[in-house]
Length: 125
Image (cartoon, rainbow, N blue to C red; front, side):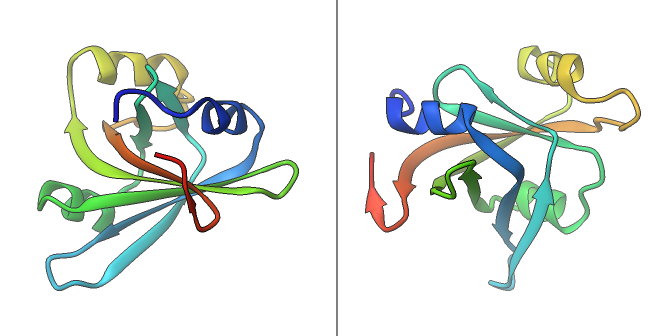
């Protein structure tokens, strides 16, 4: 995806509560977590701070794709799908360290490179 659709970018700014991040294990079993330490990076990547990942980290390192689900204050849902980079250094990691609360360890930046965006069942890109 070259850029997040404008509708989704605006919705991201209006999101409420934690996001739901889902990965899949090598055994095919999905794993979902709530995450509140998240940020849009550029216009095609969402970064989730790995503060306390366990299965999620294992799944990402094994090559799992992912889905991120969020809801707006108007209760409209959006889903972003893509592939991960698990980063423990570099520009994206350094950026994560600037917004991740210091009370959390910020072991790594799980960068979801967005390949598709949905609003409900409607594919936006």
